[in-house]
Image (cartoon, rainbow, N blue to C red):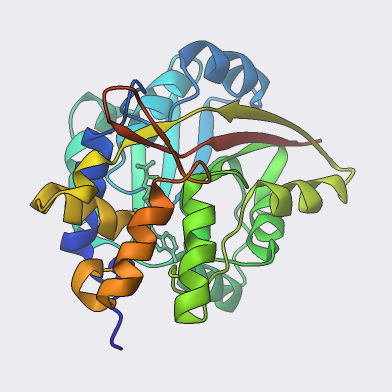
Length: 291
Ligand SMILES: C[S@@+](CC[C@H](N)C(=O)[O-])C[C@H]1O[C@@H](n2cnc3c(N)ncnc32)[C@H](O)[C@@H]1O
């Protein structure tokens, strides 16, 4: 069976990601912890500098990064922003967000590559620059399966710098669905990884006493009712959930049915009285400070 991983097909990735986000159910459109929490837990503890050096890993189209950059600019004069993002399409979209008023105070270096390629290049160049703020929002799944990337990112922090990670927690429907898919495919659908989730991060952080951290648990839901109908929207959502291109015609009819049945179970979803099927995608935000 020939499986096309969605992350290798950028146009399809962004189309299905957009449709999935359009179906967030009673949730904000971004994976945001909110202005107040970001101010209190991140901006207020960052080192007081004129110039802040920040790094984004898998920043995507930059929507959340730009919101956070604006929040930080309330307290610093200028920002040197380094972006590591393998999708050309996403980088172009991010550039268009930063080209207006932000460009006067934000100087961005774009790296169109994966986090793994960035590490390799950086280590090869024996680079020593460090960052005051690093964010990795729903991107570490593609980079790691044992927490090594967390250690790497912590090492890139300046003293008093903050690492901001958003990641599925262990009870998210995604993680449960990935386990189900792994039974069939022999491995998890995300290319490199078996899924880095909250428990793995906590294990890394608890073993390092140079850090203080805070976890904010967020309840998050997606209306996946259209996955059970013959619709383009439903097929795209299913592709994002399974992280595969054209999942419906990749797997056997029997397996497709068993995945659809599983998606309806309480492991993954809640069925509302009006029949809507609401997928649970709980995620955690980690705010990690290097003492
Ligand atoms: C779920 S999206 C999140 C995008 C953005 N952070 C947001 O909050 O909307 C995952 C991002 O990780 C990027 N990505 C995929 N593989 C990656 C890798 N190996 N290293 C770094 N980023 C990766 C994707 O291109 C995509 O932009």
